[in-house]
Structure formats: structure tokens, C-alpha cells
Image 1 (tube, rainbow, N blue to C red):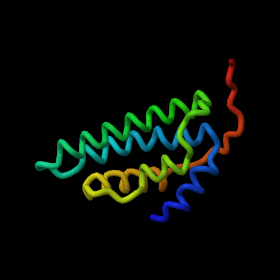
Image 2 (image 1 turned 180 degrees about the vertical axis):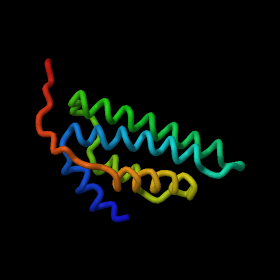
Image 3 (image 1 turned 90 degrees about the horizontal axis):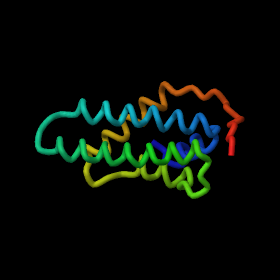
Length: 116
């Protein structure tokens, strides 16, 4: 998977579509972590999935609240897709990301009403 092209794809999405993509990814990460093979690495895989989902939920919240302090898109995509020492955790992320990417349809949302 080419990280730079994934950064460009994600950066081109509208705000709501980014939040939709991240929310769908949270679901797929949880499913992938549950479906993994058992064994000694199960606790590590589940802890990894939980931590990633907490980070992604926070990022989604920052997107929807238009928080200027949120991490840039490239940082988030690199966090998701960079290679990892633990290959089981890397597989969880890669598989979940591919499933979201395959089924994702952008609705080209351009307006977000923020009643401040």
C-alpha cells in the first residue's frame, strides 16, 4: 500500500467524509482484532486495537468539532499504515484499512454547519 497516495486520498475528502471514514475504520479494527487467531499475542492485539480506536475516536471528534489542534491528515495516515515491529498488529491495521477503502463512498460533503 502506497502511504503517500493514501494521504492524498484522505486529504481530498471533505470533513464529514473524513469522519465517516475514520468511524468505519474504528469498526473494522475492532472486528479484525476479534477475528484474529488466538494464542499469546491475543492480548497484545486487542490492546493495540483498543488504543488505536481511542486515538481514532478522538481524531474523529476533533474533525467534527473543527478543532484546529487536531493532527494533520498525513500524521494520522502514517500512524495507521506505517510498518510495525509486531506484524500481527500491522496485519490488523492493513486489513481493516483495506476493507474500509474498498467499500467507502464519498458523498462530497462540502458544508458543515457549526453553530458557535
